[in-house]
Amino acid sequence: MTGPAPLTWRVPPWQPALLFLLAAGCAAANLYAHPSVAIRVLTIAFGLAGVVMGILAARMYLVVDEDGIGVRRLLRERSVDWDEFDNVAVVYRAFDSVTLRITCRDGRYLDVPQSLVMPTKPTGKVRVHAQLGDMARRVNAYGEPYRSR
Image (cartoon, rainbow, N blue to C red):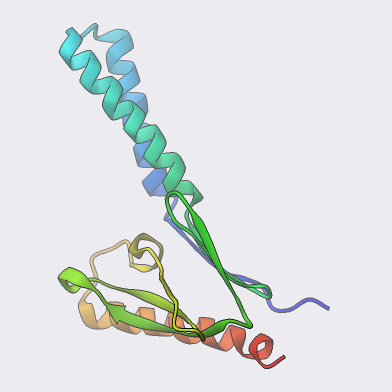
C-alpha cells in the first residue's frame, strides 16, 4: 500500500542556474579577456564560489513523505520521523524573518531554511504568512494518518 504523493519544496531552479551562469562568465573572462593577475584571481574566486553555492543550492530540499519530514540544508540533512513529530508552525525569527518550525514531542525543533519556503517574487507580509500557514497545514494534515499509528 502506498500513501499519497510526497510533498516536496526545493530552491527554484533558476537560482542555481544563475550561479552556474556567473561561474561560466568568470571562466570565459579568464579564458578570452586575458585580465591582470588581480582580476584573474578575483574572477576565479567568484567562479568557484558560484559553482559551490549552485551545487549546494540545487541539493536543498524539504520533503514530507510516509517516513517523516526531511530537510537538507546547505551542508547537512536532518529528518524527523512521524513518531517523534508534534507539529509544524509559522514562526518569526530575528530581523522580522519568518519560516516554518518543525517541533518534536520532546521539545526539539528544526527551522526550515527560508530559501525553501519563501516566495521568489516580492510579496506582502500578510500574503507570505498566509502561504506559510497553508504549507504548515498541509504538512500537519499529511502526517495525521502516520502519527496515530
